[in-house]
Length: 368
Image (tube, rainbow, N blue to C red):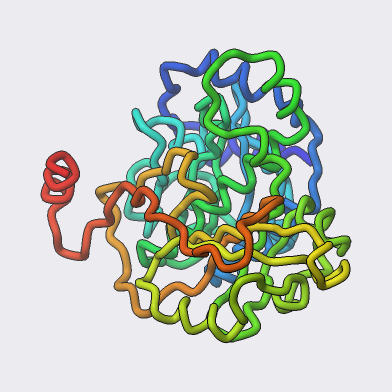
């Protein structure tokens, strides 16, 4: 349902909104190709619900920025109970997500206190119910390089998150775009000679989000491709141990856990396994599970990273983030071959520690 436009005209007609990016015409074409009008996706809704739990915020949403409006394609259940009346389309001038389109390079936007930011203090969602105070949005970067909108989290109180936690949002944004583009991925790759940021395989790969704090490695999220690979409904995998789905090849579970405990934080690794749903013998096809820390900000090393803003101040990292994305690929190395993945490119972008002038970070990034 659309928001009553008179509401915005009445409360904040003077809000100018974000500047229009130079590539707006091409960006709108890329957005239109996805045919997202009236798009409803339970998988994206589930993702938003998980984000509210991981960040302990009341609302998360997948938003696209259109020519004159911004639309929520999916949101956490709380959005339907907010004083904004659960409405999902509103004028672009009031879209915080529209600001993620502006930087020259893809960059996350973090606003710790919207009332202290001139851009947003008169925004309808800030000055009126639901009285948003914190906003973090990661641009949805299409395979052709255009920013379609943002995956965002909001709170009604000022917040500050660690650098790793913010990059977790970028990983989910990457997953959301893969979901949005999947319907047209095959046609685009067959018809286009342009260099695309994602390979065709990324749209059909199974993806798990697992928590490695406990030996069971419980599954927090699974995409539909993973459900197809395992024969289990995606929602039914949530909370299950990863070892219920797969048995390791080439090492025992205890050996893997010991190896993982010795790895430095934020380290990529891979394992080879067989699905337990089939016969647990040599006739069952091998799969490779490539694990990447959720704090890396992308699901694989080939998709460009979204930078953290140099002006953001991040909360101290109090503990090692234990969440990993696992991408499931058909095939694997024979038993006995090394399972350790080579080092992969580091994430770009740095958060400014509290009290550090933003220019110092900018100079450090420029000299890196």
